Every structure is written in structure tokens, then in C-alpha cells.
Length: 84
Image (cartoon, rainbow, N blue to C red; front, side, top):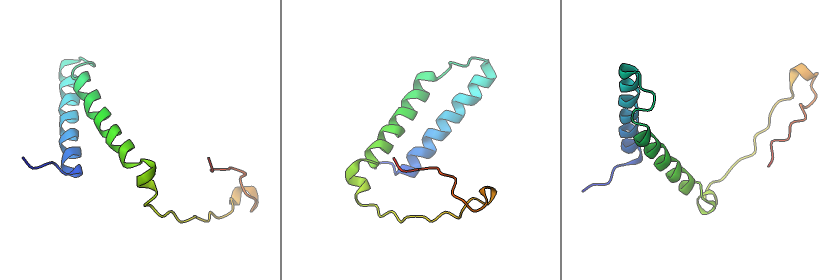
């Protein structure tokens, strides 16, 4: 059996979630399909976390970005420090 690509898996997940949403609207039951919805979202988040693991991030080259001074502050920096 061929393994789904990420795109195919996300499209399938979206179709399932959309079907659940429509059935909830039809039935008025907000909890309908909750376990399936949670399983899909949890699986995608786990895959995302795995893809963003430190060894994967080590392969990514990040360029610094220069932001223009905030005009509303008269050319002064906003003072925000976005570094973690």
C-alpha cells in the first residue's frame, strides 16, 4: 500500500473535519465526531513537532530581517524584543 503524501493526508483530514462540521450543524450536536476530530488534530501536531525537532531545525538557514523604524514613534524603535 502506498503511503500518503503530507498534502494528501492534510486534504483527507480537512475533508473529514469538514464533514464532521456539517453534520454538527445538521444535528445541532456540538460534540458529534469529537474523538475523530481530536485524533486528526493530535496526529498532525505530533508530525509538526517531529518535523520541527532540533535536528530538523539545524538544517534550516534563517536570515535576519531588518524592520523599518516605527513611524508612529517618530522613527524610534518600538522597544519590543522578539528574541526568546
